[in-house]
Image (cartoon, rainbow over all chains, first blue to last red):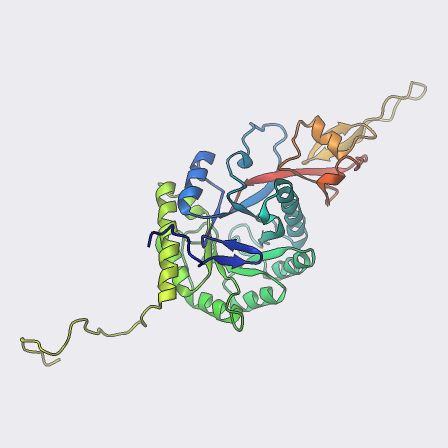
Length: 279
Length: 82
């Protein structure tokens, strides 16, 4: 089956049904042209964007929106750069206002980031929970960037998060999925009695195998940016990520064999014409 | 940061109000609205959002929202991000 064949294996997050399980960021590309081609090759239909001050003086008329087909992609505005719940709520509302003006379906959701620390870019879990509650009350579907702590993940869901998005490793670090066990426990807790609750691995994936591992664990999707944008060949890596998310999903659905310490022969042990060793 | 007081005995000038837009000072006139400000800045409202004193000003309210002296305005757009 060709990878691009439409299947009913859609990723549903709130009111949004996404064809691709890859959500791709729009930051850090060498050019908007390269960004556009990379997004295309990644197969994604959902891209994250940030909210920043309009450049009033040195604007060169070069705006992200001139390079993104907003009728093709669902935009997911983030609150990156916010270090308090107050700021995250402000930025989320501004993002919604922009998307309403663009008539993009992403106007009803937000990728919530409330950071604690510039060095690690780790989220502030307490402020993230507070911001989640306030944004949910304001009508947002909130997709929460979180650590891989299963207890925080559960608290975010209880606060009303539409999706919890544990980090595989720190943002932009390319370290992959550092604690597969925590992601497993997050999945168990978040999907307990609610198997369709969407869990996305957000941040830290550096290459195709990282994406495949995340998907094989049973997460519903992967959100990434730097792994493609800063690859030596972003187009090649975007293509690899598209295959990886598909391969990982198929492997998860098919069910992998358990890991064993010792070998199990693939060829029959009966009928051999050679002698056997004693051990 | 405020305009100097006008000289006694002189004619009363048009009083410019000072506001900040994205952290930089701008002079506007009494009666100017958020919509006027965007026009003065040469900005198309599409793809923008405006905040006045930490409160969002919805697009439909730009024409009726009058600026006041000392207002802190933020004009934001979308940029690449993860």
